[in-house]
Image (cartoon, rainbow, N blue to C red; front, top):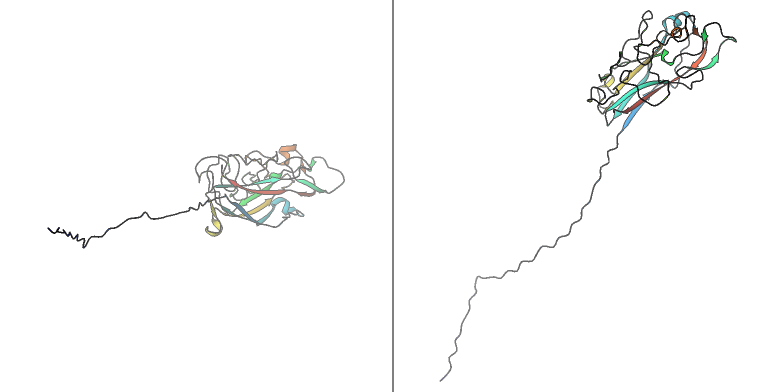
Length: 260
């Protein structure tokens, strides 16, 4: 008997076999650091020396005014304050002008060379936008007082201790005030004169100066930092006091600082 062969044909038409492999991937990260440094920038345009020469009676009585002698431009990335302070080397005493030349050989009765730094008056064209001060005068924006009505509205802030401590909340600032209340109350928001509205913005100040010796020369407009305590020569030294003729010097520092 012949053996029969069984032939089995397996048909796999239309069937495919697929093998999946995982996708290869590699990655790297780059870390970026941003360091935002606070910027306080004060640009000042002014003569290196501003002279007041009193050589006639009218100048003594009415004073001498230098208009727009200093221009201040502010740029800041943080809230800020701006103030002015009168300083000297103190060769006649703390808080007084330095005497460089004395006219005459002997002092007359009542004559003194201790002239208060607060005899210099300032006037700013743009009022202080901050309202957080508690003193009689917020800033130096008032008109110069009349001769017959002495006032401390414009008398320069003076720090007798000659320190770097900012004025108190009761003292005058050009912009901002000492304190920790909301911006717009005691500080000016960051910004720049480059993007502000020209000559009347919170970032631009034109400063006038005046010195009024008076007759006799007692500097009736000299007042202490509170704006109400007189510092004229009669108040300081008594009746009959007057300024010794000579050449005197002092300087004004404008300080821009972050509002605290």
